[in-house]
Image (cartoon, rainbow, N blue to C red):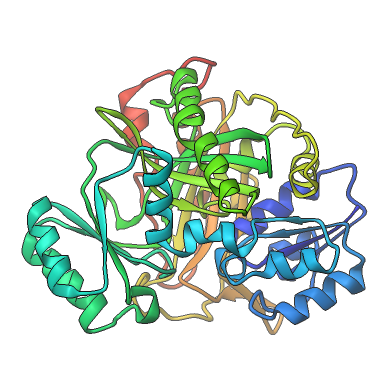
Length: 431
């Protein structure tokens, strides 16, 4: 099978690493890829935003399957373009990708389908938004409707902060068109989890769950980032909770989007809050999370290519094999991230890190300059370790991260430690 993977970040490196292990694979091409992906695939310098270029590349490579990693090309309709040309595509078309592309659309769909979520309202008028925020009371959450690189959800501890967030979106237009409409919603209390399921346009299967760490500093302090680390499994998501999430959230979501005339072929990431009343949806993503994908893929058993291909073609979905491994991913970032940060710093120690037990280092923001691996982004690497339990994976991943060196690097040192401290063991043998 000839496979084209669209994207060039840590998520796509993890997917290419796993897909390259498939005995069905004949050729793997990535657009644009990165130096880590180049270990598994032929990388072609075609941007994810160059839809014409991606289509031409798929035609040239005679791709049997195209896997689209990032959300931006999905929301912009790349999957539709490719399907119109006759390609099998893992990733939803634009009408279904609106689940991530428009928070207002997603919340309205949840309301129509009776899917549990926070109380909310949608606004373009700042005065009306402030009135509703006062009605809800602090804390409150203000969200830009459109894509904002993971930074469009603002948790406001006070009403003054809510008013400032509304002004940032609707008056100062800091998020541009993405913030021209906002969702104001109640603050949900509980434990967050990222739940992943794959659909073939009709049936669906659960893939697994992970927990992300969004803020830049230990103890969940500092500004939000694209994600500073993740772990799997999540102790509070036992078999009964998995079944409840599938029954009350995942299956109704796929059914609701199908009723909109947009059957879903790809992976859905439901960002959940496990509240005292049960699981509720915080948001949807229409692709694998990053860095959740790195942790999740590292523990998957069996041939991932079979599952993605079946979903893309609307064929029966093979049930993912249960795993008894845990994984932790720690993001190593550039100095200053998520603010302004330098690039071009030489990176050392990856080979040394990968000699640690169960460790693989996924490239997120790297480049080759004059034959030297250097930093090329805010989130540079996703150091990932698997082990028999979350505490063991934590030990391995931090031993590996300590081997990596570049100027200004920083990473959180508490990824997964809260769960490890609780010592909860869910059914099925995981920590």
